Length: 230
Image 1 (cartoon, rainbow, N blue to C red):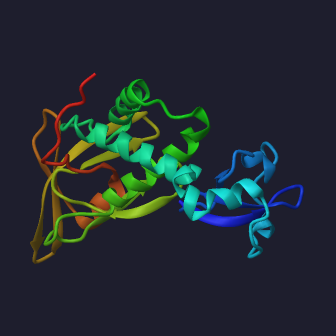
Image 2: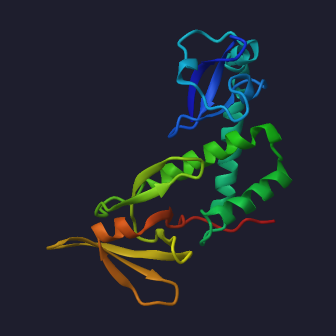
């Protein structure tokens, strides 16, 4: 998540919390809410970005060393860490997809419910964490890149690793195909990727074909994962 100073409608300078890949405004560091900077359905005008110092008293307080733990962005980050940790403990797919995160959010809400005003910030931090994972693969794996669409906006090119789950969507037929990556190998003609769909024989594609056909959905489950207790 990006932190940039923004001028509000009343001229007050807030600390803005922005999507790290699209630059869209998510919220502000104080409790004034994002609509102190943009009106409903209004996009953030880049002209509102400013190098001027913060003048919103609550944003200044949020950035004080003595109250840093109460900064809304940092509070949301801690909740996001809890959500991802709970999702990881489910171990097997869909540990890192929407269902795993949904169950983790529910479990977290029962144990230590966050304020609703933090939900959008928690979601942004979770998305950043998932993106970092999607961009990481074990050392020594040949690099093959496929699109990875971030949940809160923005698409990056992510490397493919063994155990990753990929998705192919046929718009014409409304068909979602999910495959798991069995392995990558160097050949005289370039890198090839072997994948399998549930209940079907493995299929091998060239790096170009896999990048054109599939996008990355999630990564291989962590070996130390367990199960969420609910």
